[in-house]
View (tube, protein in one colour):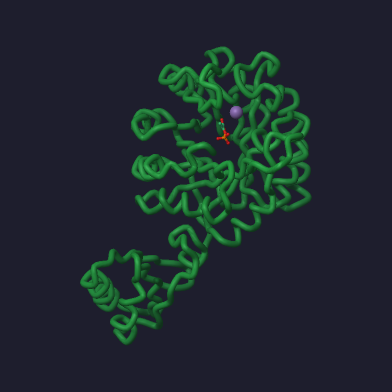
Length: 338
Ligand code: PEP
Ligand code: MN
């Protein structure tokens, strides 16, 4: 429920409402906004508090939030959230491109990729140290050693780093090394992991679950935000459908849909969405045109020898061409790349 206060409500009036809400056993959240002052009330049936607060000095109305997710919805916060990841912004006017290998393989592979993507215009580096693999005998990442290579690549290039965390037990270590924590598609409804990253004090990149509806995805984001971490960037990476010609089916309509339902930034991962290198550039341009706040793209020095996701990884040259095309489309859309 949202308690709407007069814009000129005094501090004692606001405090009186907060006290009232607490007396009813609910935790109030103050929501100062550009246009209004609101107090959010979360819980199983906060509407019971309504009769007690409407009529208090300074209160205009108390209205239920219609959606099952609360804090991540536009009703709760009409203004878009801007997530700042060590200086890289998501959710403002800029379009921010994250690039890097699927998995961190060794120092030469990572640093050469980091240098190449930075030279082409990427503003953040990706690379998995802990890899969720369908087959347990596939390459599952270098683990903690991979995190150290990411730290070194950041030192060398200045690019902030995003990397996946697979279990609550690893959250502290990964949060200590990375600028942003990635929750992958397979863990999108691992609620204990979502709560753990919500407490980690780092921005979170939340991929859409393999078969998750947009509502389920936003409820996963709500788990993170409910722990006090408001810095969540959503990532559309395709969903599973009957189609086997592509690895997944990119749901681009999710971009404008999520933007209308939620204030959180949204980026697109055209690599996992398609599974094929030649589809990455067209879907990247479409993502920009659809209103996404950025991209996450897989790039490898020699995709044919990649230890994971080679078929969908761009070469350095292809990534450079993609960045040039993105700049041209951004200009036509009156947007700019950050
Ligand atoms: C990844 O980005 O490395 C990854 C494993 O992606 P997803 O969780 O979307 O499959
Ligand atoms: Mn991958």
